[in-house]
Image (cartoon, rainbow, N blue to C red; front, side):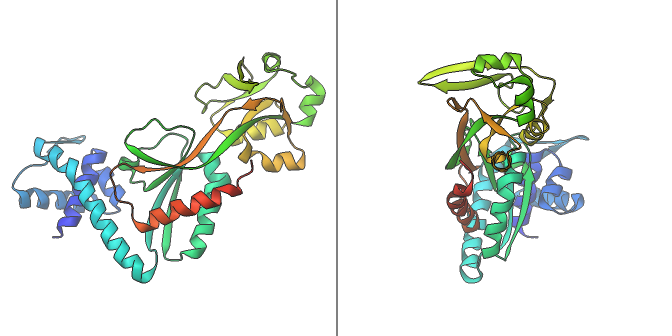
Length: 297
């Protein structure tokens, strides 16, 4: 039995809390994962996991091993990947996470451009607007919008994004254009509940911040859905510019309150603290740092 497989099975099971979830992360059977962990416990002469009918927990020895094993596995993976990739080019799978709208508008296309130069790579792109747990979900690299407060992650800034206020021309003809942020209280605003403060839209002008309290008939947890509703004449949306560039060009949406600066933030690549990055992940991050400039300002 390979001790590397045993360690991988133990780490996946310990992090996910069950043999079933650990097996799914590794892409092997539940039975094989359990067997690997049992062989590791036999090899070490100590119990690592406390098994119950619903989940597994760590023994003191298991906690100690979990604190050290991931770094050892990462170092080994990096060593083998660098030797292999140095002679055969980049190979293997890269698991990537991104917010839904940003992933659809940009990340999928960026990965396609990166893949053209690296035919030996396979990609698993997972789109989710929640901040996924990179360790538990087996994610190699995540792209995020705005500031990250997770201290256990390493971050590299790739670029920035800005937001705009937009509506369909028919809506503006019927209801008029807001002249100040305060006017938004009298308009139908499409609320994106993914925002940290969905009903509070922030604007800045000449160093002064104005916060508009908004309301509307539509509450959605998707920037793309908010944009589509605005384009259908259902109200005003506060959306990232990279997601509305095409509609602005075609005239389906028009910008509002352009004299104000609106919310924005960094676009970042994040990965687990303390792990040695395989060359394929470093190469992808470097590529994204150059490629992200194709996003509309």
